[in-house]
Image 1: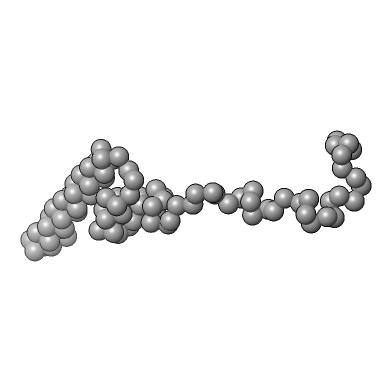
Image 2 (image 1 turned 90 degrees about the vertical axis):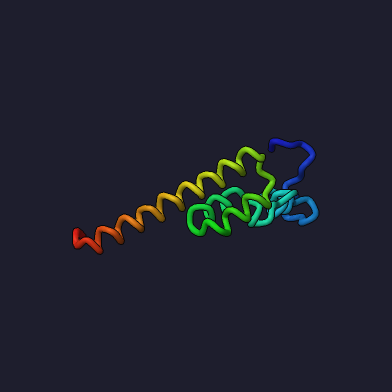
Amino acid sequence: MADENRRAGDWQRKDLRQNANDLVEDPNPEKWHQQTFWIVFFLLVFWPVGIVLVWRSGWHLVAKVLASVYVVVAVYFSYNMFLTVQAMQAAGMA
């Protein structure tokens, strides 16, 4: 045996076992809406919720501004692409 203080049947005693949940659980778990994964997910999938989550998160101000600028630029290009497609359809090109 590796440990001289342990006896052959010690593994059966529940008071000596370490709880498996204590090994996995984070002592300070973040709520789902404060986790970076979900913030970025909502920025890409449903940007209005993503922007709100960014500004309510603990991110640095620079990261918040960059995320907001990214969303504004993406919405701008998306809107311009929509107008271009509409103009092409009206002209009978598409």
